[in-house]
Length: 182
Length: 77
Image (cartoon, rainbow over all chains, first blue to last red; front, top):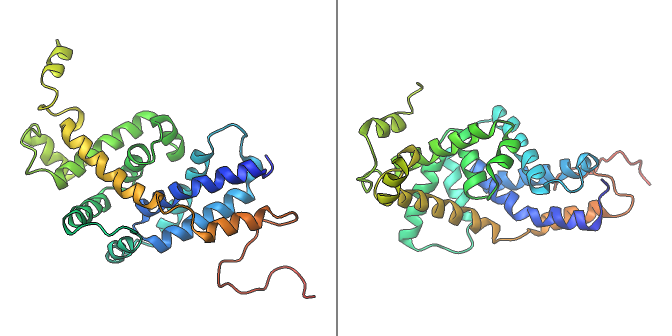
């Protein structure tokens, strides 16, 4: 469809969450904004292929996710850079304690396999349904569900394992921590 | 049977994937806090301008990266 005013506004409205998604994926604020810019350019160049009435945010997220994926293959993430850069994007300076907790969370999130991280973010933070997340990632709904579950388990194991007495059989925890390939 | 059991002990037994509901909600909370922090920053000027520019009549969806050189396909005036 042509780029109408209302479509333009809808795209604009999606920018904040596109940025949040890009930062969550890349862990780097500058890189995230480049990704968003590329996403917008690509979306606008291909606006004719957008189906009116379909899910615009999901369409934009799909573009961003694919860009990130192809880019990721080319250059590895600079992990050391990620935390410092990410902290710079925060407007409100969290308190010392909250900040520590936040850093821990961010670090744990970075340790997840990419498939699991993106699934968890789409469902747990962006608020997409499992169905939408599956279409964004180009996989089955069941695959998304299992990725989200594995992501949560792994995060829990990394972050809260001492506090989690009711965590379940040791095997489960160990399997999660060890990331056993079986 | 299964349902009864899971209801009775909902807050203490691990759910699917070995997680207690409490831990699940903690993860969800932190994830959203991280995400929403960026969402609240709104739309940076850079993107608002980009979209505005492309919306102008006759504009083509071809924009230089910022700081990029000016050698567009246009001839010089």
